[in-house]
Amino acid sequence: MSKIANHTILDLRFQVVEVSQRYIRVMDILKSASPETSGFYPVRLNPLLLWFTQTIAIPGSRWRYWLDLQIDSDDLRRLQDLKGKRRLLLPNHPTFQDPIVVFLLSARLHQTFYYLAAYESFKGLLGWFLQRVGAYSIRRGIADRPSIAYTLELLAQPDCCLVIFPEGGCSFQNDTVMPFRSGGVQMAFQALSRFARRGEALPDFYVVPISIKYRYTQDMTSTIQTSLSQLEAQLHLPGTGGPYERLRAIAKQVLVNLEQEYGFQTSQIEHQSWNDRIIALKSHVLQECQQRLSMQASPGEPIREQVYRIQYALQTREELLEERTDQEAQESMWTLEAVQKAMFRLLNFDAINDGYIAENPTQERFLDTLIRLEREVFNIDQPSPKGHRQARVKIGNPINLKDFFEDYQQNRSLTINQLVVTIQQTVQNNLDQLSN
Image 1 (cartoon, rainbow, N blue to C red):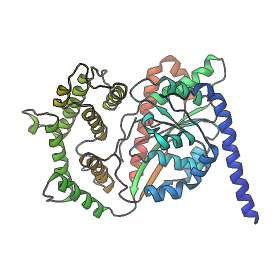
Image 2: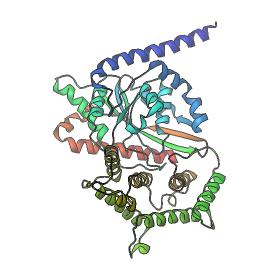
Image 3: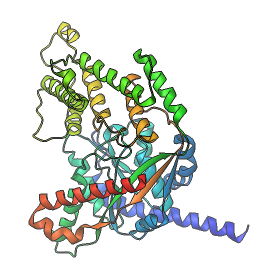
Image 4: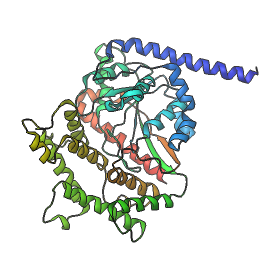
């Protein structure tokens, strides 16, 4: 056997041993905080499976998702320099493939990342797999105490690298971000507070803004034309005009259909802008669902958080409405299935706005919108990939929370909010740079 082959085998063995040792250290500490209950799924890291999955991730994602990771060496080095430090990675979340992109990043770095993932993802074989490559669950829409406690224990570990998507879900928009949630930064400060209460020196704790932007590597004109034609056929539209005019006709028909389905008609509707109509329809649907569930929104609560609370309420109640006869349930449009469908729609169109394509008519923005319309019109969760894409990743300057801890002690809410705004702006600015 050649010296090169021997060196490669030794290097692979070293990686597996290193991951195994990290696994033993972390799992020993988290053991008391990781009860396997019906409401929480902790990490069950399998070092060999993780190493194998990282090894095949690059060719596997190219074959399965038509996806390749692209990151500059300087950005990669920025993360490499933080190895062994506590890190909280905060990427934007434009597509369902973003966790795969971050996993590809971990494979390039030969590092173990931990992932906070939606509870609904941990069903069946997929859930078993996710736990063994570093993911654990959180129930959205409630204060998930087991998950929060587990996160705080995890963040206390010196070489922890935790990934949280601060938008709280997919935006389905490649160039823009939704408002970031503050929970990740808040928990990181809480982890630092534990050191302060014990009188120990504060460790470095880095928050890293990460921007993910997808770019198709080929001309997508024919794919766009095919998608337009399929949507027009389903909606019985003539399909006249240029691609943008056809897309607007499809979007208008979908909006009208939804307004009619939910009985949302006003005398002023034809004189309102599309954005006003979209906002009013969302508000109407939310209020109807909340009324049926005897729920109320908190002042200023984002639509996505309201949706998650409704979804959690649906999961924990056997009946949608109390004290209703079967006949009343059949006559009402707000059946359990109808509310679930409404929540799907609200998440699908959460970040949508008229003018998204017009302000920058790229094929990526065109397909962002088409994919959302396909999800609605054809009632599918995840449409197949449209073409091969590069996932371009840019790493923002890491922020050491230790430098802001004194400010945090003086005014927690203000410090957290200012940092979250800074992180969100960094992610958006870097997305803009990736567009050039």
